[in-house]
Length: 515
Image 1 (cartoon, helix red, strand yellow):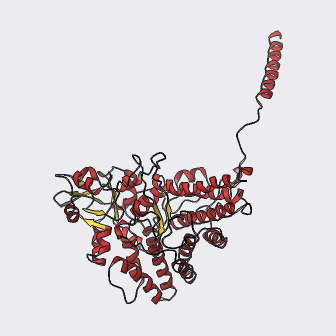
Image 2 (cartoon, rainbow, N blue to C red):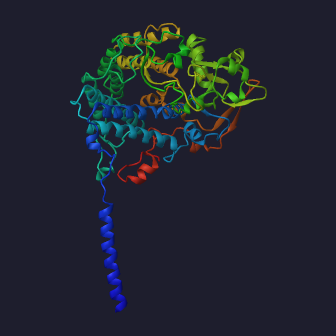
Image 3 (cartoon, rainbow, N blue to C red):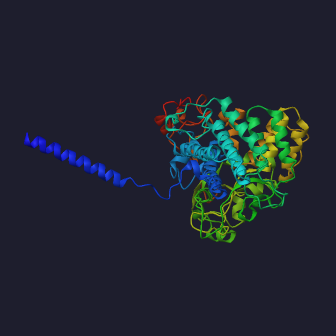
């Protein structure tokens, strides 16, 4: 009994002591600002705007590795099969819902949506012109992110505000409602009058999202919805604005550091050339030629940066390009064969081998360009350029019955390519121009899916991989994938899988078929 009473007294003392300590430890936080009151000045709102651009820039790597590997014109590449097993799985269509590249892009798009929703929930557009512009930017970024999600996953959850804890488990979105969000966001942003515009084709000062970029995304989204006449009308406004023209320099030099913000590019992610604040971008190194197996003197003479040879073009793509363009200016400025590389002093060193078939992308070659630090680049990434606008508009006009206008737009591209005009265009002509003009720019995969062409092109991928030898010969080896476990499968690959971890955490998401 004495021991029991003693325990009660001790427990009471500890309770009083804990309560006393609790009172002493209840200290107001300093230096912390509530998100509900933070965005009250232009300086604070600018931080939210900057976050949108940073989130968008972080998606560059996924956009130009994941999507080109899905379109069938590129091998995974690298030093050998298995050098990057994730990229192998994408190119061979052996990926599943656990795939890191697919999951990373999905999560990155929702990170961008979250940043946009924060602005749209917290920033009062009536506060200032900066606030009004930032809200319009958020609408454009959110609409673009949902365009990517809808066109690749079909029914992504619709999240149009900052979720409360009891809202975290959102179900699959309804396509009509998702497209309505895209349309409404872009309509509001365009009509706001807050988005900047270039003063003319020579204006390189505008790096933000512009009204014309918003219109271009809107026109593209309308085409995906089958609203062809509306799409053509919106895209015509971009073309006739007088703000942009096809690049007026050497075709193969458009995507270089020296030509940032050129007359053709509607929107770029900025990689500043600042050695004190270098921006990491491994993508250029990943996709650059496998330079450790090439002529070092030639590499040095041409100012080529080191690379690892991933996302290498296929010989079938090269042959199709030649069949379409002939030995044209555009072909030579886009992709080169091994003989041309040897003539330029860039050929493989003796007894070297490379993954690939002896063809090399030239238009987006990875040059030093005063790169400020290891694994960094000062070359911007272009999300949309006028050539794509012309080709999307051509398809919209053709589908709406205006073949003459479609032909005019396609011939604009062909003249820059220095190949003959067409008297009239078909949908196949537009498909071909998109394939060659926009190659490895991350646009073709979604088009192939929309057109229903993916199965025929990709049903046999994943069985073999090439090795290119210094003497010009090519050997192929078995990837080890059973035929029924690789290649594009109907009833499955029409959509990408929702990331497995997202499905595990959110039991309201129904996984896409086949995964």
